[in-house]
Image 1 (tube, one colour):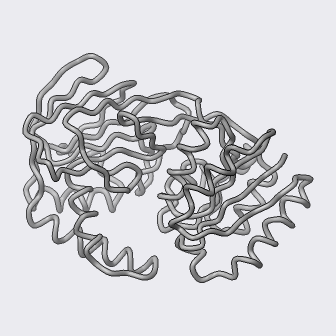
Image 2: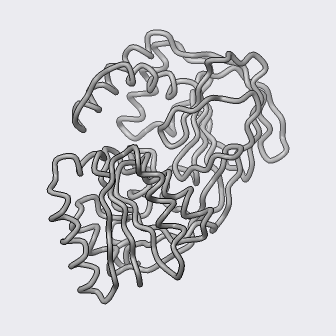
Length: 308
């Protein structure tokens, strides 16, 4: 297997590491397992260009992306469109797709696990023309991220603290908006505070991570019009992992979802894999089953991590 890695030196863990030393370690690990390996270290502003250049290389190869969830989401889109297998090296704050793929979060362990792994087909979803491997969200989450982006932070813990401050600010005035939803051909109209549509339904863990990444179904999560009090209650059930028993959240499984916002403001935003994007008046979300090839740990390691 030939692996070409692109490491985002501005991504999470990498900011404080000796990246030249880490790149050599990665090369040693993959060569020990009989693979060829090369890497490049780039600034965050250059990551998309570098990923596209690697994906366009001739011959069979694996595109490895190292960085946070934003880097991994961009890499997944590029790999999917180029038909190139993707390897995910988790170096961010949450590492949600890496968790879903059962990849160890400690970097050296992740290298060993991937170097001994195999390529499998998993699902990827789209919101109009934008792909995602985690979720598309509207309402409360974009509002919170907009608040967080006005705050300064320089570390993982700083980001988490900023997220908490943004959550408290957003909770003071939860959003409420009308939406017409057509879920697998069945229409309904609601007033809600949040909608999250996941690339495969979430599992039972506290974090919003699917148990299975090739189920071929969207997880649709709808929170009705919430007050500050009911939003706090929802947050507590998320923290304790009991959110599925919260009657303010409805979970629906679907293959395709169409959203129409009759009273959309020009400044309205959505998030795609945690990144703010403009929210169009009409959005079509679909899952593309088994269309993204990824390098994953050996099955016995996946099963062990599933049981942890």
